[in-house]
Image (cartoon, rainbow, N blue to C red):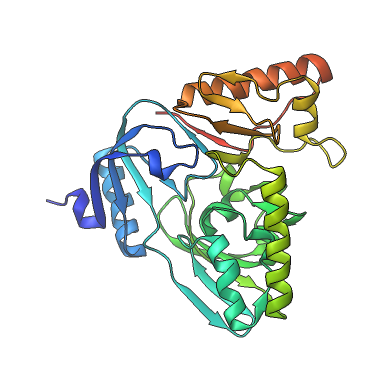
Length: 295
């Protein structure tokens, strides 16, 4: 008889505080770290047969967890962390952190991920939500994606066959497909110039974003280039507004920060309150960039 520990590294009764960047103090019955695609496929088959609830997370940098115990399996693909270089193309599996990759490629004479050096997300997560910064997105350097479809079959699609847009993708609209790996097409460049750009952007982030406090990055998508969400939230006077220990950052109004022991409910209530106030004043429906994990 198969058991969960047959499908990778299994942890029981896991506190999720370190697995989400809001640092919400919640728990899951099980966390599974498959060490191969085969293990992941076998787990998916087993979960279907046994009616076991599960979901996949990346680095937990764009999610708002529930406050109650998750009575299922959270699948984390951090053990799938291979990087392979072939000329200017980089094959990378889903669990690799994109900010680390942005630095590693420099050792191979490649550039093109400087924009991602401050994003604390996995490759899988960045493709899922088409993460972007400085008007450059994950799909801009993407060549193809390999994933498991709803039948747990391995499929590979070129970028041109995958729908994507501003902070979204086919995978976000169809989360039953699990991203396994991707090939990125990068450029050759000068290491020192790339490092200078990375440092410059880090200094900019430090001066404009509340990096000293737990958050999950931008809360809402920008309605337009000329109408950033932070401006609308600031316009309704919500900088510094708190619900429990969840607070709209005084440095950047499109960030919610955890100033102590914020719960998932605190954060969700603050998100919904912000949406309502912006709608009342500007008649604009803010679109949530982060993802609620309900269980």
